[in-house]
Each structure stands twice: as C-alpha cells, then as structure tokens.
Image (cartoon, rainbow, N blue to C red; front, side):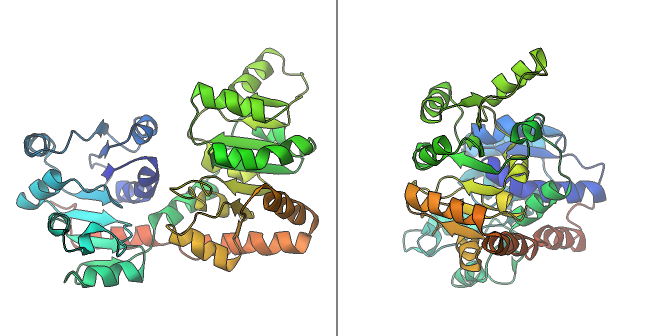
Length: 369
C-alpha cells in the first residue's frame, strides 16, 4: 500500500485491516512519501514492513519491484509516480486506486496531460469518492473499472470512535467543564482563538497544532495565557498526583492522538480553514456528534462543503464570528443538538467504502494464488 502522507495512511488502514482478517497470512508492506506519514506509520502493527518509497526512477522502480514482487498494490488517493506505475503495469501486477477525487483542473484532463493519462492506464480499478469523479474519468474513456465507493475515511473515523481508547490525563484536565478541542491548527487559527480562550478561563481548551516544532509551541504559549504542554502536565502529575491543575489551556506537543481528543470536546474546531491549502480532516471530529467550527477555505474538500450545507460544520470568517458561534452553542441547547446530530448523521450515513473495495478484491481473487 502506498500513501503520500498521514492522511492517506488513515484512508488505507480500513482496507488493510479488513483484508488482514480475511487473509491473516498475507504480508503487508506500506510505503510513504512524506516524513509525517512515515513517523506515525513505522510503528503500525498492521504492517510487516514500512518504508519510504525510493525516488521515482526507472532503475529504482525496477529494483524495488524486483525485490518486493507484490501480489496486489493499493494506491491511496493520489501521489502518482510514473516509473513505478509503469513498471507495475508492465509486470501485470493489479493496482487499485483507493478513494481518489478528480477535478477538471487536474493535468489528466488538460491537452498537455498525456503523461498523466498514461499513469491512469496502470490502474486495474478506480474506487472513486464521487459521481463527478466517475464522469470525469468517463471523458477519458475510462468507465468499466470505475466504481463510486465513497471515502474510506468515513469507515476509519467510525472505527476509531467505536473502539475509543482514552487518552491519559485528558479527562482529568477537562474536569467536567465545557471543552473546546482545536485540532490541526496553524498560526492563523490560533490567532482567531486566543482572545476567547484568554477571556474564558472557565472553559477548557485543548489545542493540537499541525506542527509541533519547539518555536511554534513557544509562540502558542505566548498567545495563550495559563497554558501548559501535555508532556509537562503528565510529568508533573507523575511527580505530584494531588497537585491541582492551574492551566485551562492544554497544548498537545506530540502527534497521533488528535482523532481521540475530539471525543472530549463540547465543541470541535478544525484548523487550516484560514490558510491557502484549506481545512484539515473534519470527519475525525464530526464522527463524535459534536458541532464542528472551521475557517472559510473549504472549497477543495467536498465532505466539508456537504457538512456545512447539512449543518454539521459552521464556517466562521474571523475571531468575532468564532466567539459568537461558541457562545450560541454553549447557551442554546436546541442549536447545539441540531449541529451535533447533523455532523454525526452525515458521517455514519456514508460508511461502507471499505466493504466495496474488499468485495472487489475477493470476487476477482486478487489475493488468491
């Protein structure tokens, strides 16, 4: 299974785990392009091997595939590597593209996109997220092997929520107060939140920044008064279990626990919506049936647009709007319940992509010698 980064790894996990149940003796190799994916994925118990994919070249592709000789390849969402995909096609190895989204502005659909269109010829089947993606592939004459299966991320977040594992120390920090969990935040998000956090010490804030470099953590500590880092809090509790917590803002200085932190929220804030690349994964928050708030840059993400239309996500344009939304949700039980239900219903209404992919693999005997 090849994943560009951590988000794609999370998309691929449900398929690997479902296949492992059916084929417990299969060997699983996962490759990454991004360090953020590899750093988390390297300890994944569901894989036998986890590597970076060597740079895309004719020699590397030939050598790597000669060593690995895969029976089946799952390519998650995107990150197209020409020499590897070409080599897989020439060797007759089935490659499935899992949960891609296609848009008209991509090179595949441009006059200059011949090289990209050649890469699409390497895939045995496409399990796309939307009808529009299927229609776009149809304009290239690709139709028989295209299935609208949805997004495996829905299955992944439902699995995480359904098998919830508590995060040490978080329930004690929350202490039955109202809680705002802000995940995958950037500086732009934090500057929209700091005034409200500093003005409301009765509310617990849990901030999980997208980047946990020391300089950024120090900047956050300067922004948020009465804050502490997760690692510091846990160390102090170990040394003095009876010590009262003075901070009301908790800064998460590690990666990997965000999907579980949203469980503790009264309101979820998902970062990225004030940056050029747009909002991060809102499904990790919405699955818990909590209102989700984010910034305005959402147009690249169909699930966020749909969630906003259904009421599961509330879009804010500035700090004043954020504060107004937080106050309304805390005070108005009916409004809170409406947004909570909309978020949960949207996620649970779209599960099932993993089953469709696994069914195809089984029916076509792609893992049967």
